Every structure is written in structure tokens, then in C-alpha cells.
Length: 79
Image 1: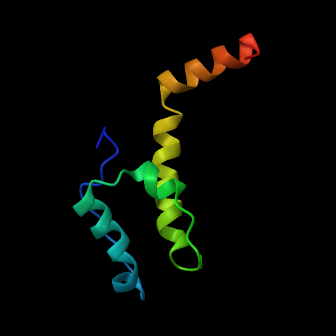
Image 2: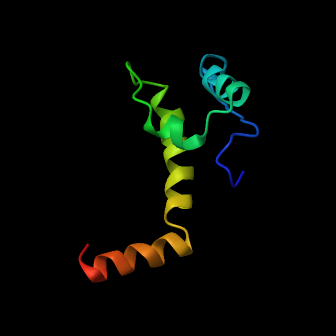
């Protein structure tokens, strides 16, 4: 959603049942995608895929047209 809240999740693969819990917990507690993106996974093997999915969403949102224009202005001004 525009607010960054997770509305649903699908995971396919051999360890899907082990990985879906992070998204279920996030949805239940109103955790945003950006929060998952900033989370350090202690033993990042399969769970790193969850973080990367959150990163991908967050990066697309961060570099939307309006954010990209603002970044260009800041760089141009040398701030």
C-alpha cells in the first residue's frame, strides 16, 4: 500500500513455510516494508530473500519520480 504496510504475501519454494512467518508477524503488527528492509537478519541465509524483497519495494518507492527530482535538486545544490 502507499503507506508501506504489507497487505498480503506469497512465498513459493521449499522453505516457504519457514519464511512466511516474518510477513505474517509484520501484517499483524502493522510493520512497514521499510522496517523489514532496515532489519538485520542475524543468520541471513534464506531469510535474506525476505529482506531483499522488502528492499526492492522500498527502493522503487524511494526513487519514484518525485523523490528522484528532489534527489537531483539536492545533488545539483551540493547539499
